[in-house]
Image (cartoon, rainbow, N blue to C red; front, side, top):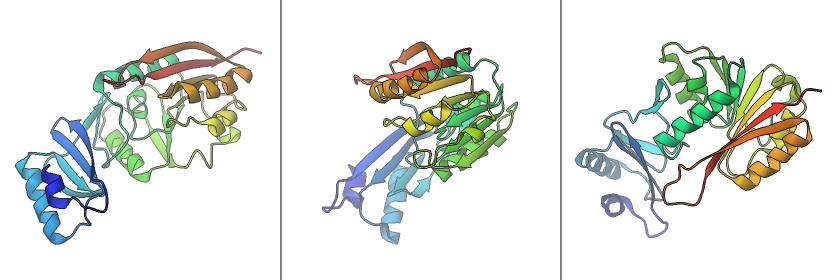
Length: 252
């Protein structure tokens, strides 16, 4: 209510994304009035009054009272405003454990659609990782967190739009295993490239059973076995479900 009163606009709907951090709420407001000096001061005062960890307005940070760190495995990351994160901490932990069980001791590992490092950061405790993501600010946050995490093996990273420019077979063949966590649309182009490689194990994380089924068929038609599908109910008050598919290349 305070944010709407301070910066709401009749020309657009004010949308607020709230993320719980250890230091407090991390709020991002989209669709408000353009920032000026007076609004910036008022918003910063509101953040202080309500003890927010961070307040961002139209994707610009206006106040950070305490870094809104998120734990990911052994690491702590400060995600950019509006970054994709898993819905719940227990759901994220279950996803990480499931993916780790699928990949076992494989190294090096490719993390496709890596985001801020949900899988890269914990997996780096046992394997070298190459993270590929389309958003530079997410990769910067991942890199900063990796460098501060004791015991991590190397995490290299690459900014790349995997829908327009999927990794090609000669690039993919450098890796023993891959984890892929695409948006709801799935990753048809990238999965097609995976089928032409020597990668033995793929852990596919999906929030959309429809696109997962399409991409799973591409993999199984090309010689991979779908050995397990693990559903994870992490979307509270929703019928949506997260799942992890374990694919292993069949011996020829």
